[in-house]
Image 1 (cartoon, rainbow, N blue to C red):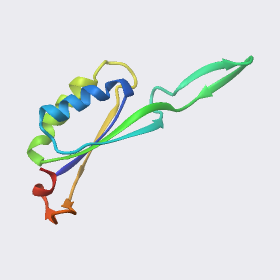
Image 2 (image 1 turned 135 degrees about the vertical axis):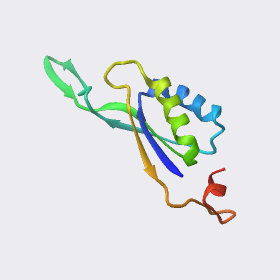
Image 3 (image 1 turned 120 degrees about the horizontal axis):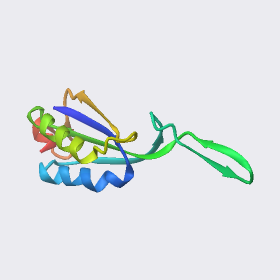
Amino acid sequence: MKKIEAYIQPEKLDDVKAVVDKYDLNGISIMQIMGCGNQKGWREFVRGSEIDYNFLQKIKIELVVLDEQVDQVVNSVINELYTGEFGDGKIFIYDVRDAIRVRTKEHGEAAIR
């Protein structure tokens, strides 16, 4: 199993949710966050003073998928996110040692299906 963690533009959330539906994935976590990368935020003038906003609104998505699903899911997410501009996002992939569904005590792949 692998955990896919993606940092995306808020307006791309529905596109990523469509990928989750397409592959019939069972579970997604979505968090509103703030951060910056190459975009570096933006500047505004407030009452004659320049203010530098270093952090931008982002969405962090986490999902756990089977090993054989990783490439398809990640490639589909990339296709949905890609604009060629700064801020398209980042995706990280981690190994998951185990998963446990507390209600049934199922382990491993059974817990994420």
